Length: 68
Ligand SMILES: [Zn+2]
Image: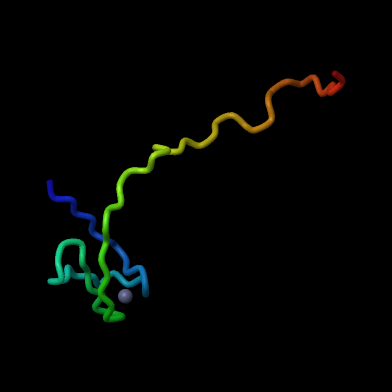
């Protein structure tokens, strides 16, 4: 399984003139700022995909009485 992650923009200068580097897999060179960098896949997040909280923090209880 070849994990290819192609960057669309240079993380340093933001240009799109990227080309794969001969340094190895995941290595890219930016022809604009002449930087070489490497992308590495760290893994999936343990928390999973964070869903946008559909429910607002305050509950829908309209009774605002806070007396115990
Ligand atoms: Zn660049």
